[in-house]
Image 1: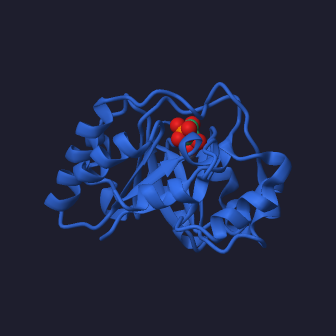
Image 2: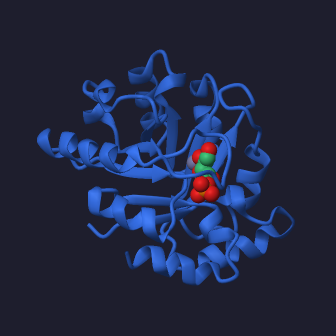
Length: 216
Ligand code: DX5
Ligand code: ZN
């Protein structure tokens, strides 16, 4: 499968969100990645449901929601109602991950589990078969524009091996510090979805940058 590109709205111009969504709609982007932070699970606060709900009617691409919050299970129905295609919850934030994944699917969404940089992939051994996607953080979550953690390339390759060894087709998404150089190595290592915030939205030619990421 050709890899997908999911620009992260966190780095967009919030005064001109409608124009940013139009840029996404008319670009080669596959999904729009949306980062929700609570100031507890991560040391930052981003945006919440009012922004998702405002974006949804304009957006012509699937909405990929990354919840960097404690107790994400409390918000499953609200995320579904806001129109999410994919709901990503952090492994580190879910005590009853199996129950949470089942509830996400029952609400009609695809289910993703996110691992912080220090969280080993072996912890997914007994849940992988229930997941649509694994999201590997290649920075510590909470901020855009951080430096890529090199170990993420090896981690992606090992994740791919685990998925293939189980005969699964779970997607691997990588998020944080992705540009044309890190993105290329991630795709070679087996990444299926590249998230990119700063690299896309801080560029003077975001659609060309998206095309460049798609062409890796
Ligand atoms: C970080 C977020 C990312 C962020 C990536 O906590 O999960 O999605 O927007 O931004 P860049 O691509 O700038 O590292
Ligand atoms: Zn994210």
